[in-house]
Image (cartoon, rainbow, N blue to C red; front, side, top):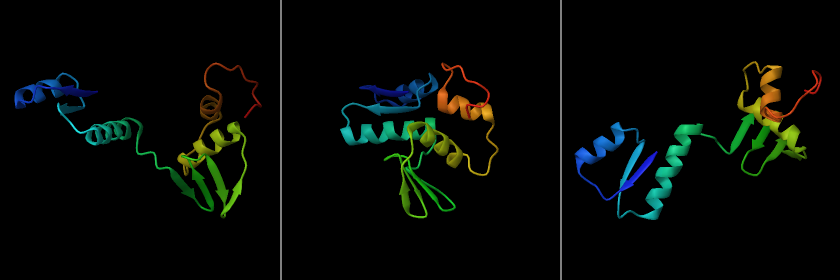
Length: 116
């Protein structure tokens, strides 16, 4: 939560942060500063999601949703991309069948055991 307020006393900032705020910005403020603070909050909440992920000869551009193997771009279906993104983000970890299903299909789809 980012608190935007005209109150600028130290006691006000402390009270806002102690009440649950993650950041505090006084008015008037520059839009660029607001944007930078929102980006920082998103990074803290969702992790530092690097747009370019590399594992061995694989390169995944998460911003463009492109996949390259040894420099050669390969076309993937949306479902294939979601599986690959999960596996690249979790490189070196064991990823269970159920985790893959949940990531790719969500909770709304009924699957047969061999779908993944």
